[in-house]
Amino acid sequence: MESQDGTQQPHLVLAHKLFLLTHPDAQDIEKVRLKEEVFAAVKVDDMASLYETLAADSVLEMDQAVLDTMRAKIDDELKKLDEK
Image (cartoon, rainbow, N blue to C red; front, top):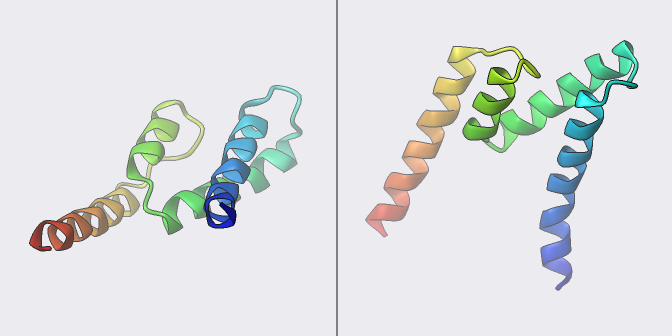
């Protein structure tokens, strides 16, 4: 059970940061920090779908090169899984 908690915690932290980022009472300087942290988390875990959603909602800036890199990594992983 502990391993499940360990894998869920980073996603809960990310969800909390997204909440704070979209909260109207958050200070602008805090939003800048939160955007950087959310972008880093999305990029590290190759969360392409979340990145597209956040960019469409104007929460993050769209960087097509980053999105293409994430998609390529996901496609490679899918190919490896299909081979197994």
